[in-house]
Image 1 (cartoon, rainbow, N blue to C red):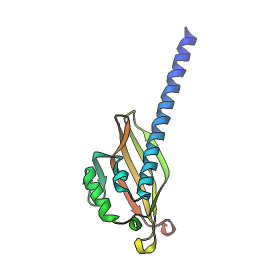
Image 2 (image 1 turned 45 degrees about the vertical axis):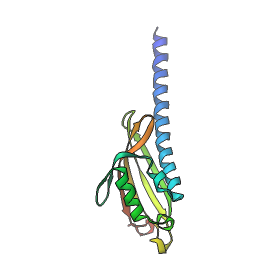
Image 3 (image 1 turned 30 degrees about the vertical axis):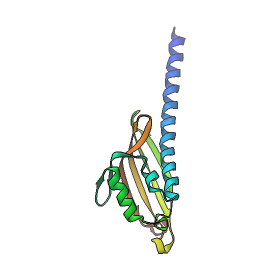
Length: 150
């Protein structure tokens, strides 16, 4: 009987670990898909991962996917202004089966005429809705290019 209980406990723990790994992989996939959409100049697809009622912490704070999309279109009106986006140093932490945080660095490579390279940090709160991870809260900060950081 003890052996059966031990086997069941190990099986349950293994299943939980696998589920967590799957969720972390799914969230990283969301961010990879976002970068791919950005790099194609496709802001609408980039925004697909944002929840309808999302909040973007910037100046000013914005609420709702439509408002955030309008900001991106205003700030990045051309493919050259958008540049090429890369996320690095991603760390995903599951808070429970429905909520997670993701943090990391972002970097845009652009020519000088389009504003030059820029980058910074991001922190996201994501929610799993109907089996799909969506961004509820995006706090993205810009910093000076890496070469200029002290």
